[in-house]
Image 1 (cartoon, one colour):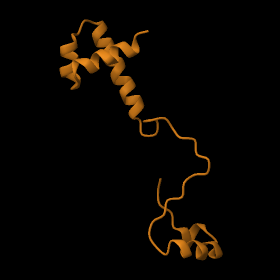
Image 2 (cartoon, rainbow, N blue to C red; image 1 turned 180 degrees about the vertical axis):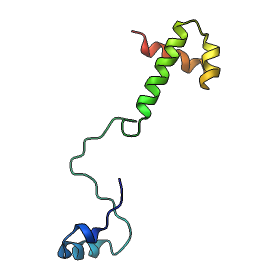
Image 3 (tube, rainbow, N blue to C red; image 1 turned 60 degrees about the horizontal axis):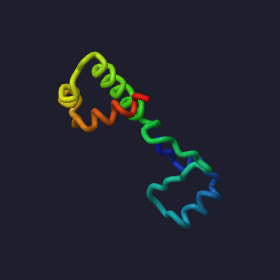
Image 4 (cartoon, rainbow, N blue to C red; image 1 turned 90 degrees about the vertical axis):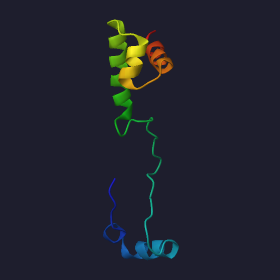
Length: 89
């Protein structure tokens, strides 16, 4: 989201009215009735972890140990187990 100049967007009468409340500075205007996005959906974090977890499961299926996976991905063995249990039905 980029910043836009209110003087370019708002009619002069409305701009004078807004200045009564916010004389200068930055102001965030939220979307009306915005539906919240799930965690990580906007910046790609969710898909990054999904791919990483799939790679972990594939490596485990090929015979990698929990210790090897923990060292490779910088995670604890408990976290590797949790990832494996979440993916398996």
